Image (cartoon, rainbow, N blue to C red; front, side, top):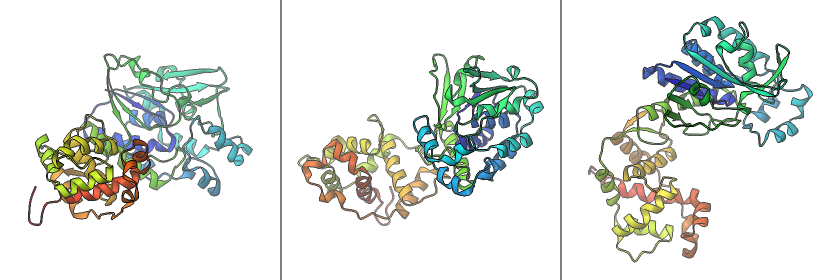
Length: 408
């Protein structure tokens, strides 16, 4: 199995959370390729120091990565550096330019204390990284054997040289973050013959090169929520991302249901259809009114033919979504509004009961003030969706809620 780690600066804590899940699931990694922070995490994975990597990210602080004034850090920590905003970033933060970039000597010390070249080279695991040589004006895709002995840590720093960092020379040459050539180096492992690959996404700065997926089995682990800024090296953010990486990986590889919550569901489609059909005529008509749908149709037909397709659109589901996916999406929205812990594994019944027991209606009536003629216009629905979702959730949760003493 090959593992690919995308670049993304401070978002990299997510990958170590994912690694925790991979270890628990007993997935053996034979090759690792990473760019930028993905290269740094990749080295820790190759040398097998999970506990140390988890400890580093759990306790990370800005001063452990960057030598920087606290006030300047507050200005930049939530900025997600991308090729589109890098010029604005540099223009607005003139303090960085005065020093020709952020001083990452603390990061270099951290790497020298915890990444051991001999251990990496003797691991028996393929390890590749990406960087860009400014001096030679060319990208470099390097495996261990391509990196001179004693220079691994230097090349790891080279791979992670964001444009806002002070550039450091390796053997007299300047390097730039590998994300400017390939931030998700799947092709690096494909070139070694890997067919089964897990790719852990961060959606960080950089470009992702096209991959010919024919004959490949690629599993993507995608963040279920915002990972914060590229430079947000705060303990709170890192701990959130560690948890997210762990549960997102379990959700994908154990095929749990849900997009943000991990839900075990063994019910058939009819069960979820019946939950929706429980919604009584009054509630169906209330939803139709809020969506500007015709109310002259028999209410169950209205629910199945008009309301459910519109709900899949509002909840950002595919138009092929199943009844199970729709019901779970409704419950997840309600759970999020009710601040129900997302970092647990739920049986469907337990999740359902927790949502029903904790959901507090918004009581909003924004859609009631809209003229009916505007309610079924797509542009209007998109504009008012944040308000509309809460109002419709109120009705759906009330409609699916078991009657006093009853059971679904």
